[in-house]
Image (cartoon, rainbow, N blue to C red; front, top):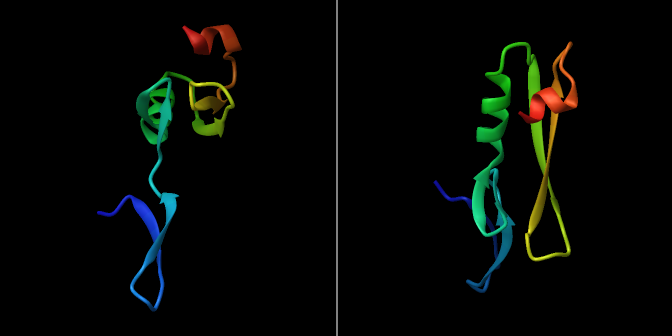
Length: 80
């Protein structure tokens, strides 16, 4: 499957619009957001989780934020 979005013009040229999958680059490593969400959801007591990437101005590329619905969990417990 194609993981990039393309826009085709009538003259046969195309424009690259970016990736359409959930893979981002963080610190030079490719990371799948869905995989992080899946790992978080597999933790006991985690009802749901979402991972989002935000572009940064430094050389690391992206910053990840994990949002979790986990009654009874505290942030330090989730980071272990």
